[in-house]
Length: 188
Image 1: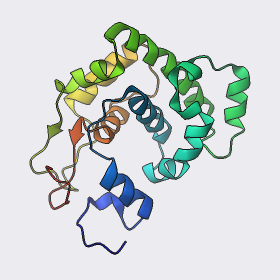
Image 2 (image 1 turned 30 degrees about the vertical axis):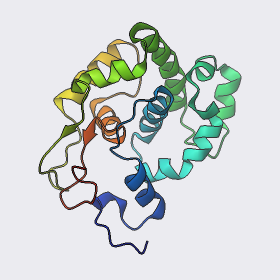
Image 3 (image 1 turned 90 degrees about the vertical axis):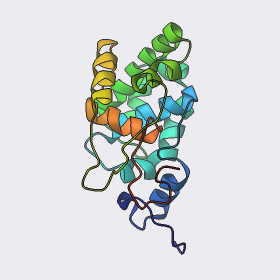
Image 4 (image 1 turned 90 degrees about the horizontal axis):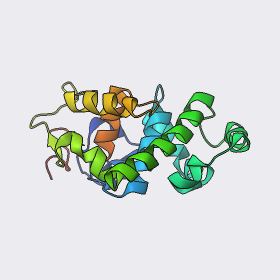
């Protein structure tokens, strides 16, 4: 990339990571389908790098009906087998089962709260949290808010929603702004 913008350390010089950082990461998301996409992708990321998921993102979109929670909630054993055979995604049985389960839980939350957005953003009092001096060395992997989110989601039956996954989700959807000091998106 030929521009001279300073970015968060984790992008490296990978064009797709840079594009994700510049156009998505940390920007507030309030669209339920997009929130569901991040929820599913962050669960698949567990134990892997975000780069791995990002490079398979289009395959995930196709394999999971463009993250239509209603369709995924109705997936059958045949769909599970199809997903397990899809080399374009992460073929992990537990994560695939979690995605289907989480679609069902997601729809329950939408029913109860009117939208998943209203439910999920309550954990940060409907605002973006910012650390005024976040650096590579001080960036967190969890917070009291991600702890509370994880606990509540687990109580509601969601899977693959530990506090670290919840925190990564919060960063991705802009509930937490962790752009580091010096990044061109820091405190925009």
